[in-house]
Image 1: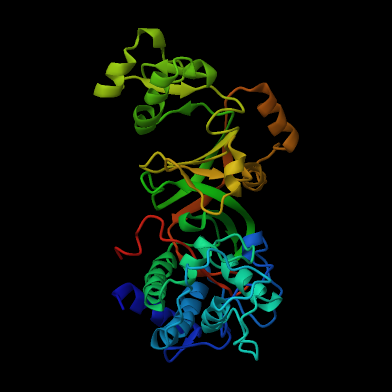
Image 2: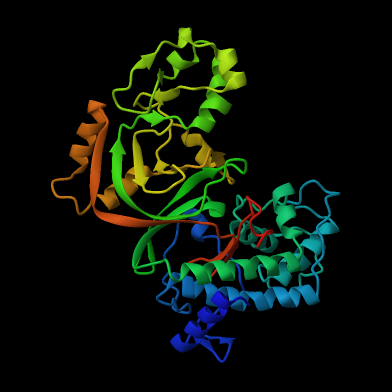
Length: 409
């Protein structure tokens, strides 16, 4: 245990959440499973009287992960069976010898309760519900069918999960000093934004984050300004790697996408005639100008952008590519964060701005001109990287280590 984790443990003991190093029974997590109505389906609130939520989200997660650790340490001593890939799919109604291995695997982590049916080789409704619970707690589509993605998650050994839990306990210990009474949290591996007030999630939505080759960085900052009808000043990397090759393949690409070439990133910067540029040379030796996309529904940033100071030129924004939010795994961007419902976030952030209304916002959007609006109550934003946590209903959630950060911790 590192120094930070030891100090955090002392804090838990003093607060009564850990007693003599033992998890407090008030945080009941004897079976770490998801229900069918879990947070994956945007239900982040709970009226479960058996679950006592501590005041701090970080404290709650650290204590609950510590308790979950015991489940996986027990599993390491009694390894669960591997689900064979000899059968491409296991699905409801099937009769197959591998169904028994699936039952045993789900019993080990509590999704399937011990019953007289453990030796049954038929994929019945009880097993389907257990598989759906497992899928929901691993960021998978809860369809009750065991395919490649679900099989991969089922076959992760308990020793790897133990390391994952320990790494994330340290991350939550660090976050305990950063999370205040209200904040926006973007969890990159979860592809999700949550807005938290006094320990409760009041707004939640799907997010698209950076692909592994262009990862979204961890950031602690404050959202101070909203831009409606934003221009997109294309970052150098995207200009060189993405747009210049598209122009070489399609000379009409810039006109089609309403992208201009300018000699510097300023509002009134002079335009450069694209026909005067040797695009082959730009591809081979570097593009020395800048691209800027005009505002509009087809703009890569959509209709709204949320600004917060950081050294990575990262921000949150709308997107015209709404269909990408249907994917389970959403690492598609070049580092910035695309939001599923950005105008819900606008409504929340602007609620203390005098004379602000939906009607005024609609007028701004319809006018089509770029507008910069300061937020009366700036909102802290934490972009973090958590691959294990406990949701508001007490369900242990795991996500893929999409950037390989768990392995290097």
